Length: 284
Image (cartoon, rainbow, N blue to C red; front, top):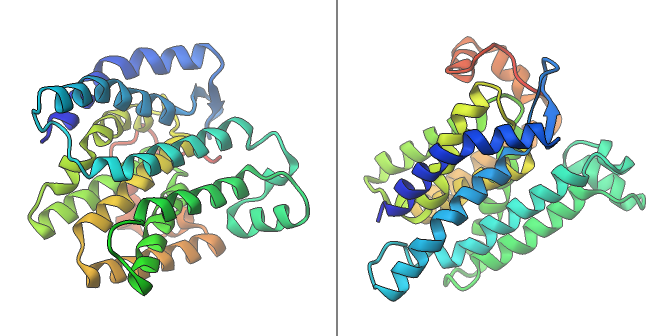
């Protein structure tokens, strides 16, 4: 069932270039770290490519009974599209309010408690609601349910924290996906999420060359895919280990700069800059 991956990747290969160029010309752009104005948020174009691929596949999957899509995708679709929509809200309005000068969960929480309108706080509450909905009905109870909920939510947020350099999010996601598939000896996550994975991988060619920025729309999308891949591939022990790692990285990212840590460790710095047009990256 790799039809979703193949079709969405082909559509992205043909459409992303013209779409991103048109976004930049139309004013859907933001300055990067070098002062160059590039398309933003590219995540919206990635979602559009996925939906274009979904239309014929969904019709054929149902009407012609061709098994082109994994049935489990229905369970996760609301979460994937929902957090991407929350990212659009943050990208479009996040800099228009004083409360959104704050960074991280702590800053957004303080702003909301002080009566400020914070799209970051709305995004956090909305993501919690969507994650609670997505992990329900899976037969998980007690701590297992809570662990699944936190793993999905924190993984999504972690990829948002990582999105401070061109192509970093996509490279971390590709590495994680490869590790899961090889470690479990399965292509299950790719079959399940391929319709969204294809545009993300093609889009990396544009973010790495600093022609586009994912925005919260894109980082939320990729974080959701990563969290779902972890939940659907790992066993109970693996999920708790993954949650501990993700939680630790999230706490670290709230108090320290992940980018500075990577820059200070040569092997990570080399991997982080691999494939990038120039050293450094963009700051939002």
